[in-house]
Image (cartoon, rainbow, N blue to C red):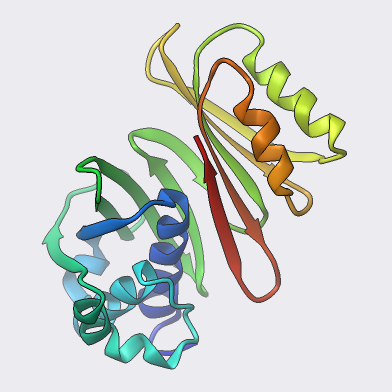
Length: 219
C-alpha cells in the first residue's frame, strides 16, 4: 500500500475504487461526505488524495496516488469534500455522491474498518453489507413474487454457487435491491441471461481476482 495509514489511506482508496466499479457509468463530479475520523484527519493522512485516486480506478498500492488531484484535473473530473454526519456508521466512513454524465446521481456509503478492509454499507439508499472479498451481482429489481427464485435459477444453470444473498426494498411491491456474493467468477453471459428476466431493472457484475477487480453493467 501507499501510506501512511492502512485505514485512512489504503482503505479509503479501495472504498472509492469499489464504489467506482459499482457505479459502472461515466461521471464528472464526486462529492465526498466525510464522517467521524475521516472528517477530522483526512488531509493529514492523505484520505483526500486516496479517495480521488480510488474514483480514478487506482489501486491502493499505485504510486500515482500522491498525484491524484492533478491526474483527476487532467481527466476532467471535479470533486469536493464536505463533513457528513452518518449516524451509526463506523468512524472511518464516507458518503460518495457521483454526478453521472446523464445528469443522474448515484450515492454509495462505505466504511474502512482497518487493515485496508472495507464494507459497502449503502447503495442509492438501499442497505448492503458488501466487503468486496468475493465476486458479486448487484441487482435492482421490482419487488415481485418469484424474482429471487428466477435469479437463483439462472445462477444454478450456470453452475455458480451463491455464498451470500442480501435483499432490501424501498416498500412492499415497489423497488428492491439484491447483492449476491458468489464463490467464483461471474461470466458475461450470466449478465445477458439475467437481463432477459422481466422484473430486473439493472444488473451489475463485479468480478474479483488476486490483483484487480473489474465491473460491467447490464441494463
